[in-house]
Length: 394
Image (cartoon, rainbow, N blue to C red):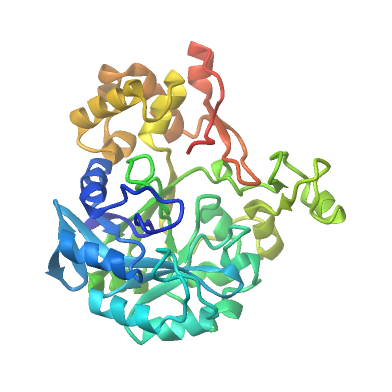
């Protein structure tokens, strides 16, 4: 069976997360998105585990179900050197034991616990409980694994189960690094709120025998990820080298000469694009035979917001979004599967925008320094005089 899965989200207990990040909200919104499997996030937080137990029915083999949505326990952990790691956990008993053993002073306060364990030490600990582990948003300049290491093996010492690409990278970028040819890539949302333009903004299509922890583990081991869906990476807010204060894009070599200080006084942050070029073995990607196709997309509400120049959560945007969901079943179906001629009957402007995305006919001003990129649909701009719309609220 083919399953749409988003493994990296956060609960209401994580800093900067919405108080609405609860199972009762995540489950129905994920279904509207078109997801079949969602990570719980924050599974080392005792209070969150209590809520998961109270809000779900255990379906067996690591799966917790609520309102027709299946969940698997996941957690992001900040380790030594501020590197973030994504962990997929087989059951609540294992999560509780690991939470107790994890050396961390904030694990009962923040859903994303901090620990001084290195990547190798964390791997050894969670493997005792049959967990799956890999770097979260591996290339991001603040907390990605590659910001501190030139090799994934320098961090973990052993082969991990996957590499999460993050919003500022995709397969075409990561497959310029030869050591990653043996790893499955994940594209996850890192969502902090339950809106469908957050949940599943990046997701994976995986071939599973059934929805279970065992099948997930088998899929990673045997390269059963069939497609990655995610943003065009230069929309990511850390894609290009840029100032974190004024957001001006800066030539990386010039930034280095100026000791990563901008003329405005702000700090320049090295972009994912340049960091990958530093450690890449190839000028062009070399995809292994098993590598899943990477398909660029954008949340439907963001597309509607761009077209009509209205906020994502306004009645105008949400009304048009709901009309399309009612017509086609889920957001993923609208973005990927629905015939364009059928979408045109509901909203011709949205149909043109989706066509532009499917055909890679969009114009983008790259993001960097903590600000998302800017986008326009060239066809709509010509026909409707559309303006470039910022994704700062994305």
